[in-house]
Image (cartoon, rainbow, N blue to C red; front, side, top):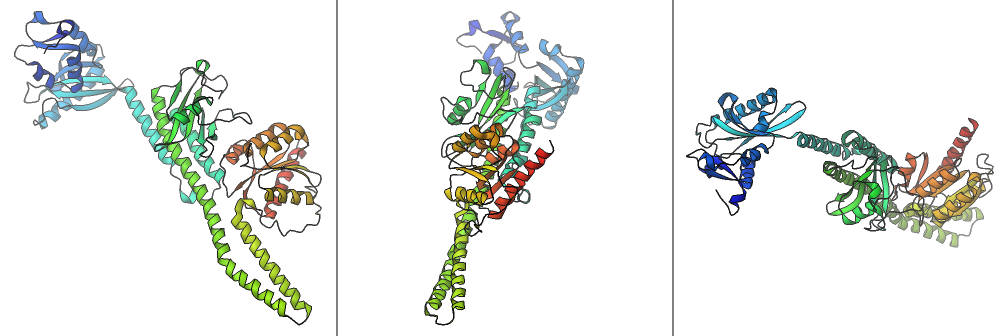
Length: 544
């Protein structure tokens, strides 16, 4: 077998009577492919041989051999001969088992092969055996052995990641349904942290989800990573948003081998040496990123990228399931409240109409008129309360009919409180309720105003009540500002039907938040949580 460059290629001399194609057809495909690409296989005299053939054979895996029945090695190349007797024994045993299989099935065609593996000295070897073409009895095989230790380790890690991913998606309804949104996400986060540390071996990572309205990369969960500064944002954009923004925009993984020399890297952990960032995908849509960092330079390789990409798909599915559960709860509550209001409208209208007609035509004593007025007032209260339920996050239940007289509340008397909510009805109702009980209340329509007040008068503040979803600054940023400027203050976060688009409650809970309210809540619930927060603060101060 010759080619146009035959003068520059090694030549493999075959024994007389053996055709090159027959010889190559009897070898494992991987062996014959290498021989075809590196030398010319020719019949002829020994003078036609070339010493480079031996070098080509020695470059095949861990070695090549011809093995006969009972596992006797009749020829092997130098590379295989360098191995220990115990390794050669295990190799020969694999070849013997293959010969027995070929003898049992003589119909096996030339060139077909059997793959098997064995372990030796904490290494894993794969053996590929093919029957020799000049032996119809199948008593002789050509065998190639390769070190596949790293491949087997990768396969084992992939199996572990796959099992951990299945566990991540095993969101049992009996376990998940009773939990609020923060507890649900913490459940998933605990599993992710455990897998990232025990299976993949990474201590520093974060998961960010793309806000589909704004393109902002919102932190969902993580471990060992410094948060962004208050007011700092990352967006799914290829420029000026670091590696995370580039990966989210391009949908491709990014391996940063030396963070100190990569202009795209933005600070994550102190003294970061390298990072690996992969997109979180739901089919063809990028829903976020998974970023892993290490203090060592060049700490990640292509295998790490494969494993993180695989687990990232499970994380994307799990977070998407949780978001769907939250949206389902939100829309179900809203639909139910609207349905109730629709069902009650006609009966309430009838009661109002009949009571009004009776009142207009009543001639008797005034006591009956008072009762009719009470009926009309009660119907209006029913309407307002049902409407409040259907309005959901825009209302506080019972805020329209509480007693407006001042209340002597020793827990709230003289307290300075900051309230932040972009819904004026809620903001004003909370302010009025707390001021009625003796507190001094500052209210703001966004998080930026609350943060400015905390920066100016933090040590004077006793309590901060903030919505999680507001323009400019979210609840998590208000929480962090309170921790920095008013560490003595208690904090309550609020969200609608458990909806937490910025995952403020989850992140704040990780950092010490103990109180939150899911809208719509009742006046009594608000007062109870405020009392618990401030009473807890008093207990802490008293124990110092």
